[in-house]
Length: 304
Image (cartoon, rainbow, N blue to C red; front, side):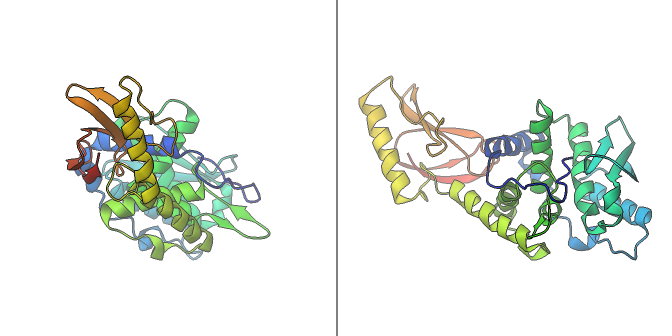
């Protein structure tokens, strides 16, 4: 797990957005919509609470057990230790049933963030058991952060982000705004608002920026909720595709143009990402219609 060492510069914005979206798609494919929705309630703040009066090892084991139960790993036993290390935490991925998690020694005096570090590492165990991984360390860590957040434990990782004039700290590979984006995607899918749980003002600010990006996903053509400018460009691209067979603008390479026109057996079709799971959907170009995503089952009102 990325350390996010105090004092290190914090990257902001959405540099990993496409990988994050791919991770959400992969999660729905692996678990199914019913499986994803079995995580309908986020980990409660009380389950991750850790005071200075708590015994260090017993408290860490208690939080780890709460996360194991939350992530539906009933037969996984986490053994938590502390040592001097470069990164924030690590986990030994084996066949189980015991998994050894090591946390950076600095968490001995920063106990409020132990839950965040454990959430990321225990999600590694979940993904290991599911056989879900991305190639390369960077993308696999982004997958882990995304799944941690989308399944209801990742708000802890965003709440561990703190930044002021003299110090800064961030855990995980996602930027604060990307954590906010995934948490907002979860909030929209599960009708849940995580913002009251944040103790860090910077975390709340990042969440609001991520939420704005998540809401933008719901307002891109050919969805009927798209704004005037987007609808106008879509109509122009559609007219060009209809007038120039074999040439189809809107390839999806431009993030501002998520749709693509394609030839179909019965005429022109448009493909675009589902705003919930980002699986691509293909529809005939026939005007207003109601579609349902074949992966996450989201109902979509479109004007193709």
